[in-house]
Image (tube, rainbow, N blue to C red; front, side):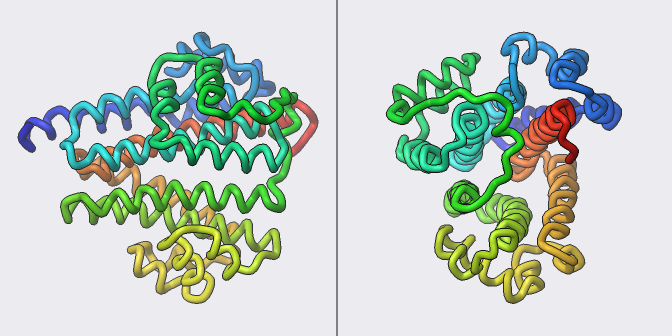
Length: 332
């Protein structure tokens, strides 16, 4: 397949992903929800309505699982048209997405036990290539199909305890935060490793996009470590290179790291790690939007389009958690 043919097929699909995002008005409409049931009712009037009706989610985690379908469909569409050399990176993105979300699904739906979660992380990492999980996740299967697949993969040798809504409102503390840091670093590192086999121009575009993600990850890690009173030198030993080196570099010379990752220096002058995380989140949105708009054929453009869909699900999940918290008398 020549470049012109690929561009003619791929560019409209990337643009199509962008055009299907929820509008500002729709987001505002969802944020006005008064209860979980009210949120589901409001979602029925958006493009996510058919997925809500099919999955019938009963909590925020199940809702996020139900909303993953547009992202999966976009991934399958892109996979059929990108050049062969780009497939490992595209698959790596989806594997990382699945690993993160399978873990979150179990964390918030089944258990709050930290040792069980570490066990889940280890077993997911041990499932080579996530082959069975990938097959189930890309099918039109239900939540039960995913649970059964995980059990077949050997994830049924720990006590599964159904809980109500309390885990949604728990704060991340102690060792569990370190597990989060390691899981996220592994996902990002895996994508950086896969980028090494790409042509130079595609690798540059991808590294620029991942650079923004890396800085955002580092800022969040700094914020977590600050809250826990952890030493950054210790935290950096838990995560793979080059992310560990970036953590140390950031803690000493944030402007040097910004230059290395081509991020505007003004963003690296925050009042606190939390403020930096907020700035970088907004900056990532702008970069993803611009990349998908102006570099529609590039692999970075495709990943940016998928990232936009992923961020949209995260936004709805955040609205869900805040809605449930308000419903039960908590104020965020």
